[in-house]
Length: 119
Image 1 (cartoon, rainbow, N blue to C red):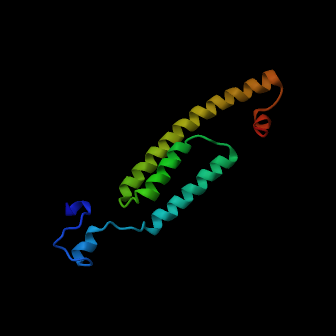
Image 2 (cartoon, rainbow, N blue to C red):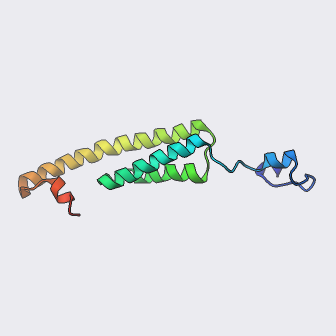
Image 3 (tube, rainbow, N blue to C red):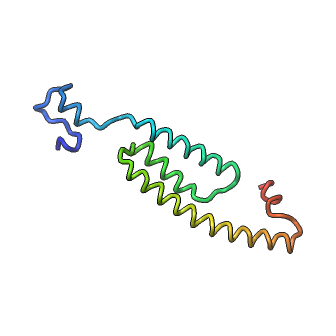
């Protein structure tokens, strides 16, 4: 069980092997810096009203802060999935919004952007 972080009775507290069994508590500076950037982007998206892919942003921040990713390849895999989802949703939602703007302008005589300000 020592591989899972469980301390063996034969090991003395504070010995070199005991220290190696304890998982690293601090995340690296680069991971914290990238998570801060994505947190800022998350709030910027929410502020300007683009509410797509907040779930992937939240999942990414959860993985960065709680799981403390140490493998950079796994980090880039998460970023690839996130960017792919955002690209798909961006094209899908922008197509639907452009159709809706045209309908608002044609039938109601007001722009979609002006109606979004007062929500």
